[in-house]
Length: 151
Image 1 (spheres, rainbow, N blue to C red):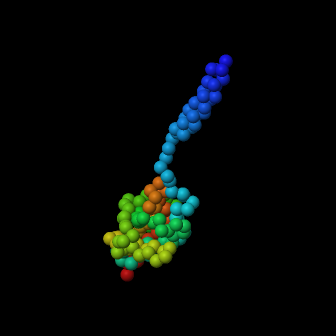
Image 2 (cartoon, one colour):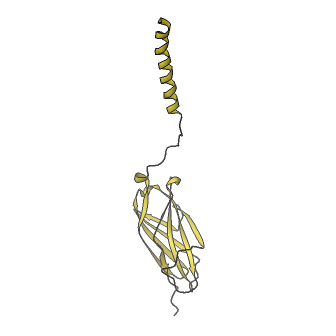
Image 3 (spheres, rainbow, N blue to C red):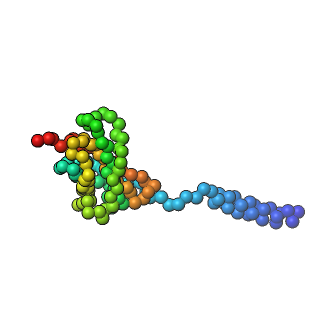
């Protein structure tokens, strides 16, 4: 009897250790950025055009220090821009924040995009890339750049 009585606490302790180890062996993940604290969004955007160049600007809201790079998505339009058509960009022009075409003043970001056909209309959108890649990108509203008026 004495042998059984001393074995029971040892078995219980062993069972407790095994359960604790089993609970600790689960799916582990790398630490992630806290989305609420690390996200930014474009709160406003505008675009203007002069000749073959366009200035696309946007205002960031949120953790703007996490803006790593950006791009301007460009959709060429054959005729007048269709405001209700889905946005289907044919290309994206990438920019680093150190690029001379990019100006950052506080929460305002401006990009100069050149090489546009003056006789064509375009739709454009800013894409901000977060330095935490798992948080994805921030998209501005789609902006219209009408063809230059002929004199």
